[in-house]
Image (cartoon, rainbow, N blue to C red; front, side, top):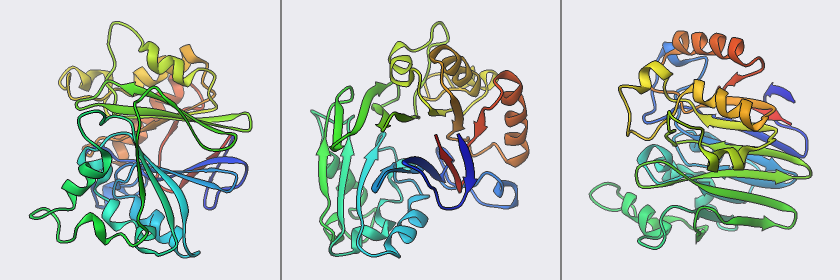
Length: 282
């Protein structure tokens, strides 16, 4: 496992463009970890996979668009506002010639992804409609639990997560390496989630919802989020190689996150805390 800040190399990699949960935040107390909401860029060879469209997707879009029309797949864990609010600001969507496929696994059969995003970009909430996207993205709804293959040899396993209104966990497998993205999920304090365990078993990298500490969680049961201690318990049971704590609560500033990083390192050496700009290559 290599860790760097900058351009990623290797067959499979993940770069963090937004690591915050619930609400973006700014200020000197959020400099080291970042204040943008959820957005990950996964590279599998030449293939570009984007996970979630929080505020972090704006900078990712600028970086991608600088090289011309973009061919990419955008996967949503769910459509709560902090995970979709950056969608209208994703530059490749405004580039004729870009090929963007957008996926979600939590809406069928009651809604579609296109309908949900159209609601975001509709008056009186937003000044321009979904049709403003000159790239004309393709929308794909599936049911969490299905295995997707957006390209030959690239497997994307999915699973349903315990979150209000539903959410989807993802596992990307490419050339013998794996990266899992499991966020916006609430655990059962009485037992480890068997669905999550099955998804992350023996994975190289697991990015997990660590919004709260175990102590904080008692005040927020039912809100749909987990803890960094639960992340450690799952990673140990599933024999995960590298665990990454993610979806930092907006009340957790750099000093708070430094303390979590130190405690997590003691609990499971090698555990990382997601920071904007961090790149991991299994």
